[in-house]
Every structure is written in structure tokens, then in C-alpha cells.
Image (tube, rainbow, N blue to C red):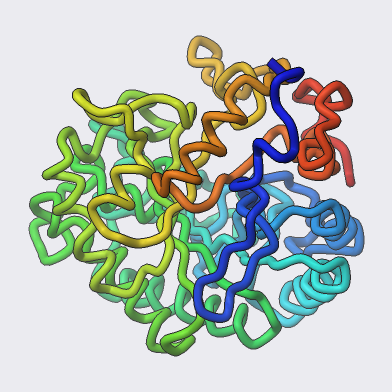
Length: 377
């Protein structure tokens, strides 16, 4: 397929885009990808170089790897960056300055893992996982159920992280509400058995997320973009669904819009798959249709297979390059189905992926290898 695609035919993909003060040179977003390369939870010079290299190579907007907010149970993995404390914030300031010097824009992904956390993880190994009902998945307990005081602390931690992110120069923030982590554990009926205002039906289960978004909006003001990432699937259950119909999705999204979300990042494992019967639109397309808000689509862009091996329940070891979906992807942007496209593994493997696609250098694109997760730059 590469011989029939040209840089001219992908003009929508490389057209500028703006939302308020956020002005992007093109529609390509670097998807957040956890890398565990921040010793003592502080992003260092190698992290700055990693992101700056991709900014220099024409990525429109970088969304960082998940960065933990300032709550004792937010972290679930070693060597991931925090977004609280003087050292971590100073490290992120170096990252921001490097990305801006390279001509890029960057937003941190604000993260709390919830019941995914196991005791023994930094910063305090004795702290268990926290979640709405003490469940990591339906019927499986882990950690503790959050009290109202715990909920208030976590909301404040997200708000403070966004406040600090704006202060040190990030261009936007993304709230991680997907993939079975804490916010998604409140969304998911299988892990939220609460009988207070943070539990109940689908709309009621959005309250925790909405309170976080409203608290962030109160801190950052009306013009600082808030991105919200959500998914149907969970790492605990790839077939899980929050919403089975467009009507349910509409009910789920409305409170988040009212809370102040500016952009929805609609996480799917394969962007080309239709979300509901009777329509070719994916989750991002439906989200834009129902809310009118800008959306980011994501899911194996540029590669031939999904990033999860469902039998192994782990990342796939390798995935071949494909350009077959680039033209349809461009055409769907041009038609207004979605606004931005997040690229993950292809950009992790090849920092120059955007530059090569823009120039039509498709033969130079690199197949993905899981070992690229270990590369420092």
C-alpha cells in the first residue's frame, strides 16, 4: 500500500490544529507509555532527551508516560516518575524546557493506579492499594476500600498535580481514567460496589472523575486544556464494557463534559474497529458525535497488530509496520470523525516516525520490537 500513499494525500494528518491556547503543528499525538526509567521517581536528563527527540521529529503533542499524583498509594510500579515533590517537579521542568526548545508541546498524564498497587512498591512498601470497594476486579479483593477522607485526599492530589503542571510550564494535562486504574475502578460496576454518592448506576459512578476534573478546573482556570482518557476495556478484563449502546455512552460522557473536560482521549486497542453495531465509527468517533468535544483516537496506529497478546496477557513481542490504515485514518480526520491521532509503539520504536511518514519515507519505518521498551532514547 505504501506506493499509493503520498505526503500530499495525508494532508489532513499534517494540518495544524488549535484549541484555545493549545496550538499544534499537526494532528499526531505521542501516546502515554510507561517506561520505568526515572530512578527515585524523578525524570532525569535521559527522560528529557527521550521526549525532546520526538518533539524535534515533528510530533504535534506529547503526552507523557503516567506520572503519579501525590497520594501515598498512587504508584504501582518501580521507577515511574512522580509529579509531586521538589525533585520530581524540577526534573519535569527540564523535560518541558527541552521539548519546548525542540518546538514541541507536552502534557503530563496524571495517574493513580488504585487497586492495581501491591504492597512492597515504592515510595512506602507498607501501603496497600486503594480503590472504591477494595476490589481489583470483580470478586477479587486487594487493598482497602476508600473512605470519604481518602477520596477527598486523592481529588486534592490530582488538583495539586495539575496546578503544579501548569505552573512549571506544561501545555495541558491528561487525567488517566482508563485501563482499570483507580478512576476507571470507580466507573466499572464490577469494582465499584459503593452505596454512597460515589457508587450506583453508570452516571453516579462518574462522580469521582467529575469531582477530580472540577477540582482541576478550579485550580488551572478556564483556558488550560484538560484531556481525559477513558476506555471500555480493562487490563483485568479485555472484554469489559462500561457502555453497550450509544445511549449509555452519551449518559456516561455528559457529566464529564459538564465537569470541564476539553478533549477526550478514547483508548481502544485497534482504532479501526467499530464501537457499536450499525455504524463504522470507533469510540472516538462516537464520543465526538455525542459531545461535540475534540477527540483523540488511538490503537495500534502504524502497526499490524494490537499491543496486547491476550493469551499471554502481556505486551506482544513484535509487530510489523503497516501503512495500509494511514490513508483511511487521514480521510476520517478530514471528515471530522476525530481530531487527533495518538501513536504509541511505532513512536517508541522509531523517534522519527512522524518525519518519515510526512516525507513519504515509508520504506524506512521500523517494525516494533518489545526490546525497544528498554532503550533509553
